[in-house]
Length: 472
Image (cartoon, rainbow, N blue to C red; front, side, top):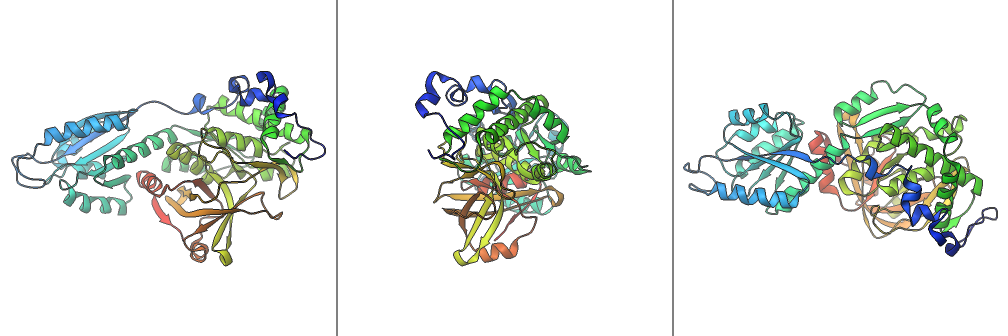
């Protein structure tokens, strides 16, 4: 490992010996993590209750799939397979035929978290009442059974902004995947993001609660500063040493600066535990430039995002909520960037001073990273993550003000080494960089996650009742 001349790091053997010091944070997590925010201590884990509504006519009637069809055996088969595929979901099956039957199901369902409406046969109209109820619903076509109703109902519901996702597939795993999206949304809607700002957010918290279901709790810079100043300095040193030992290079920051980042992380983590929050967003540039924050939170965000929680830059609630949704949806961290378009290479460069180095999730492989100063002012400690190449990424952002989810995809091709702008610069090839630039709206920031997640992202948007826009 290379270091700057004023930051001496222990040898790896000495560092890990005895599971002491910073090694306690890595090899024996309980030592350091007793006071750290972790998914185990914060992520909602209650079982989801899902009403499973089978719709079909009396088997004596003519129709699809055919007169005399054995609906009971098919319902038993599907219910058993769904319970195996979704072990954390309580499926509550009922049968409904007419629209009035669907309304009766809704009237008695105050306790369920959503609906899976399985169209087994037609003629049947019960699904309409549920799909247009405003409650989250998955509409599944049992092929050659409910197809005529599915094709007429699903598109109409989407056009009217209903919270409905459709599955028309011969694979039951596709239905289970949609159920898992609903599970992720339930966790998301039982979660809280702390927003550290010294300004009035106005109607934003209510907007996020009403459109996304996620809680936004504002705390002041003074509360963050108190948490930073009261943070356990020994624990802060351990985190600083752990980050330094894991870095491939340390360029500008001194030992003292990285230890300040450790104290900021300990303070942030304590605030998340105190407020039972799964994410934290900080108005970092404004507060740091204004002398209201003693250290950048970049390394702390790096740790939170690696561990399965959310640390988000610049008090950007759109990006913070997107990151938290992705964490639950795919089990991988998203990271905020200020994208740059290079049409000469058909590239988009995702640039920022915070990025994780465990992009495949907390249990996945780690990539190298450098500890650098924050780029804009050349102060503090930040991260340049050398991210994996040759991988598909999905980039998106929730825009609750317009009930819109915007997304695009690109394959990673290079880690750009340029001293200008933010430290991490991941270059990727989209379908058409020129069109992507021409389509750009909804602000600069985007959130990128590693993986091909177009379908679950679209499903999540539909279940939120959001318009899904594919840019570029």
